[in-house]
Length: 171
Image 1 (cartoon, rainbow, N blue to C red):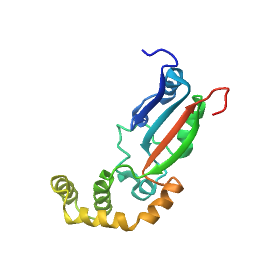
Image 2: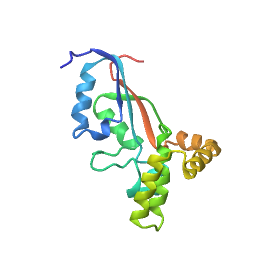
Image 3: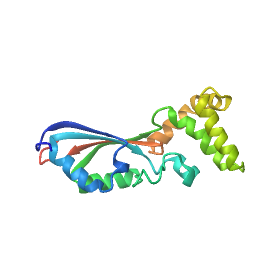
């Protein structure tokens, strides 16, 4: 157990979506943050283009491990009710590992047998230099301007949130 006002910064990288009662956990975090302390959260973005296109096969959906799915609006509301104010909220596509799963998501949408889908996933797990993965990396680079537009409107796969403990003073 930590003393109140113990931390300047707390980092939660892909944690909050796994918590059964995130409001209670955020209340504890607020207590142990110093005045004007920061909370940094990374989590999947349920508002992302990937979530909309791939729906139930979206690789970051991850049931039952991901108990809650967050959008910019829902994470903001949760933090606000816990006495934390948003300093910055943006989106990105996280690490390059998501490209591997993009290939799997595309194959899952196509009318292939389940056997083929499983074999494809095993193939790219064993061979990250498979031609389909190389193609996705090249397309990823070509689409850079579009990605920045998606990030600007918070449609990237991953949310990055910086929140501050609310105090009576201005920041």
